[in-house]
Amino acid sequence: DVKVTQSSRYLVKRTGEKVFLECVQDMDHENMFWYRQDPGLGLRLIYFSYDVKMKEKGDIPEGYSVSREKKERFSLILESASTNQTSMYLCASTFSRGAPRYGYTFGSGTRLTVV
Amino acid sequence: AQSVTQLDSQVPVFEEAPVELRCNYSSSVSVYLFWYVQYPNQGLQLLLKYLSGSTLVESINGFEAEFNKSQTSFHLRKPSVHISDTAEYFCVNITGGGNKLTFGTGTQLKVEL
Image 1 (tube, rainbow over the protein chains, first blue to last red):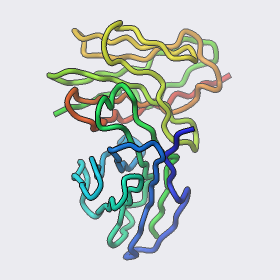
Image 2: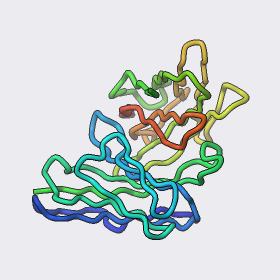
Image 3: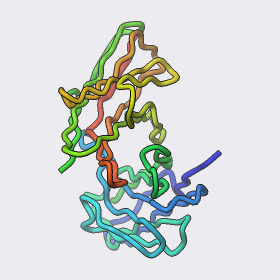
Image 4: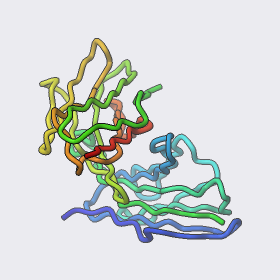
């Protein structure tokens, strides 16, 4: 069974901490994405990556950075966590060619609370 | 810019009643449309998708959606809902040449006895 695994289901961090959210996929997908989900706003794209060491800003990149050193792993980094970054974070992956046909696979999400 | 509009944030419905969740998209290029479902405390799952061909697409659990180009809509319907259909439903668009998903704001379907 193919999977996108997010390392933590729930996370509580203090304001100002550096936070790492990890995502690993076992499907050899080229593309990986980080979204945040907030009530009434749907899912908004933070960053995405088309290949190792490549990254592109999404719609709301401010306050975040990413790292993709290996094909299967895509990390989201909150350099200095703030309370407005309290949210559900979802990772997704897909093939680069024919993505619509093959579909996207999502992780179960990490609910981050910044206090 | 691509956008997806879900007009209803919440839809309450009684069990065994029909339901329609509305979705409108804006796009000037090829359109790929999806409905994703998120059950309580779970991740997102693909419900159905329109890529090309027949404008009526169906899922394995009784949902269907019809792609209507003239009305730029992709409404989700089910003739008889079950308690287990209670979830949040997202309408999603991908542009023909890209790989980024654009999500609607979601519709919370609450099925009551």
